[in-house]
Length: 432
Image 1 (cartoon, rainbow, N blue to C red):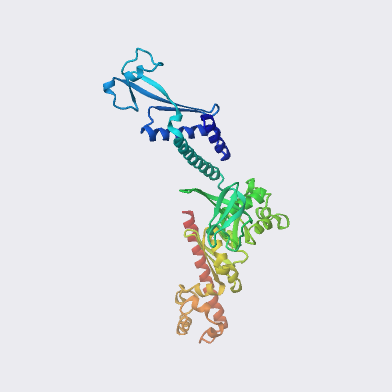
Image 2: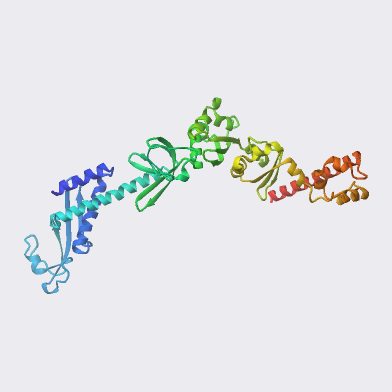
């Protein structure tokens, strides 16, 4: 095989792999550097020129002329007597001069050329891997559509796109979905990693970014920046909550996401295999935002500690199950999407807890006789009074209906004062 055939063969191989012809010259040059290093031990005084257009490989070696008795390194030096035998060298050459001799690539033999092909194939694989890495690294966040060609039971599935293999680990799959070989699947490119085996491209259907991208593609107002996604929380395949805000007062953020007759949200939910998606209108008021995010449950009221980023949501007893959700899914997603650590309790439980630090004897408006009567009946705090049955309280000596109502009013006033004071403290902490 002559040089042109060799270069053409290499160029054709590179072309099949999508590698530019210009890069073939660099690859062949590095291949012959490897061959020279193997034969001579060094390449510092060699120059390799590859012309892929003409199919030429030229190798030049610089040699210093030395006296015959001083010849020590045949890779870098040439004796004066030897150089004077050459017809192309001037007669006045002297020790210390430098000549350049042409090396015929054929001297490396067929074995070397075969080795060159192996090295070239390896270099092409490296270039191919680097190209795949660079291409997909720049495509992170992009949704792809591909065909499942392999499924490892209980582990990963693999998708082919233009002869490139993409991996979806178990953690990136939606648990409620069942995949089959040959299925067409949509996913987002989540990350690209370098491994000893080449680039590893991770795709996901479970990541929050997949849901975000679906909304961007389905809702033009989001894509154009008119409607902004503020936060997303998700349990893949079961439920998601997404907070949106409109930057244009004329556009309803939630309505834009839902679409006419629910057309837009239906498309997204169908893609997610029926995953419930709650779309929440953003509010700067934490209480309003949390209340909306707790949907479908409706809290009676919410107590917020801005400094600690906590909230206590109080519900009717028959609403508490909806508020918490199966396995705590609703309350947990609400906490994640709003950024507040939220507790949900029943109204009856809240009443039992409220006032346990307010003692009857400290309240103005209740006589000493009444206090003593209540204490003898085990009523020490406002919480004790509120949690007791009215019939039991009315049986206490000196506690009639009017007295009962009076004491209840005193206690409710004390509780309200406590709430107002706490609100002021929370506001001061927030301002600081």
